[in-house]
Amino acid sequence: MIEVAHLDFSYGSHQVLHDVSFRIEAGQILSLLGPNGIGKSTLLELLVGSLKPGRGKVLLQGKEASALTPKQIAHQVAYVPQQLRAAFNFSVLEVVTMARTGRQGYFASPSKADREVAQQCLQTMGITHLADKGYSQISGGERQLCSLAGALAQDTKVIVLDEPTSHLDPARAHMLLKQLRELNQQLGKTIVLTTHDPNHAFYLGGSVLALARGRVAAFGPVAEVATEKCLASLYGCPFTLGRVAGCTVAVIAD
Image 1 (tube, rainbow, N blue to C red):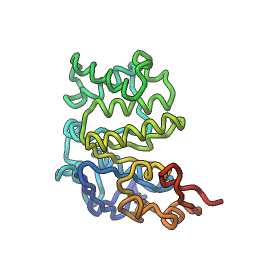
Image 2 (tube, rainbow, N blue to C red):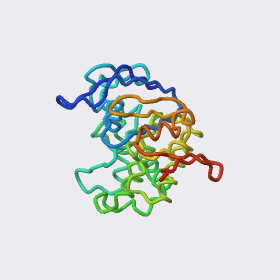
Image 3 (cartoon, helix red, strand yellow):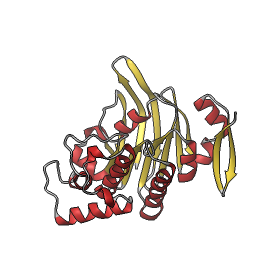
Image 4 (cartoon, rainbow, N blue to C red):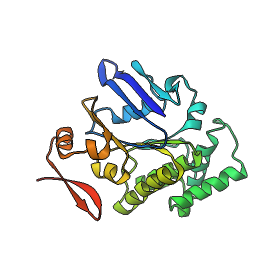
């Protein structure tokens, strides 16, 4: 369970988040929607304890995230940022393996079982051919898939992702979203992600949190929140909703 209560956050004198409150139960999917620069990524960093709120609190399983150690966080939440930067040119397999051993601490040595799990996660994401390549030598889209493989290897109940489909071509983006949906439906993983595309929220289902000017504009089931009126207000342009191949889709009405 993740609970956010009356959360404020500022960078210096610039307040980014204002009185944000919501709650999601274990095994749910939450998509954060909103335009650029309104605090979506900041909210994710608060969820995983990387930032401390100016006011309010974030609770992970009843404990304040900002009070947990990185190791304690790593046992509960796998975080996939927009861009993972490796200090050294580790191989893709090493990066994924380190994501798993992070549960034991930064200086833990990977076991044979850890490496086998990492290999399996690369296979799940369709990037086993990248295993021996240097992380700095692969494309941005391939790095996204590597990061998600690391999140799978971490084997937590919660996965938090910041714009996970950025840099991905349509086929890989669909594969990634499908993988997230299967992790939720088959393994009961709690998935929290930011996205600019409401169609991702329709595909994944679950709930939507719409952020506007750092405040909660709407929160609830995707079908109730991601309406034409709400999307138009959120992004400043008209939207039309329709059905294609049995799925709800949102298009900008020109």
